[in-house]
Length: 209
Image 1 (cartoon, one colour):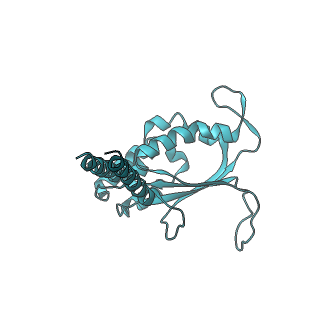
Image 2 (cartoon, rainbow, N blue to C red; image 1 turned 135 degrees about the vertical axis):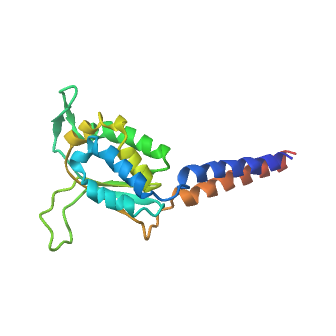
Image 3 (cartoon, rainbow, N blue to C red; image 1 turned 90 degrees about the horizontal axis):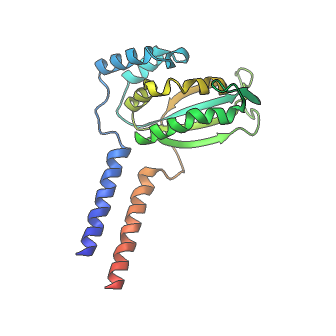
């Protein structure tokens, strides 16, 4: 009987993971898109975002996940903290925005896929503008396009947006779909972990009884 509860618990945990990690809602309707765009346009984020580009992306919603690619050039050296007025490294100032944002993203089934700092200039390029001297790149997984616009239009981040603006000199963000990845992602390793723990627990129970 004990082993039955082990597998019931494992199935329950996996079910909760599925509910959290995957989007079970329908793609956004035209009415929803319009409502979100109007709400977004009334906030601070519209200053640096083209609402029409965002609108087209939402209108093409397929209900699936996507990964936002971010290229970032931090302000060099120390910058003035927009609240305290004290000098602070731009990287540390940016964290005052990214840490709460990532927490909110995680609650919606999103997470960082890759975060890396630049260690050299363009190795291969043609027909490109001068290297903006990007500082870092980051890829963030979103469960759905609805989650993106929910976060983008969340007024809780309006006050924290000043940290992002003060820390970043230049940035480019665009959505992508992963076509090939050798990294093991949560959709694959979480059920493996759950299965492993359940098997170990069952073997332990059988050994002790």
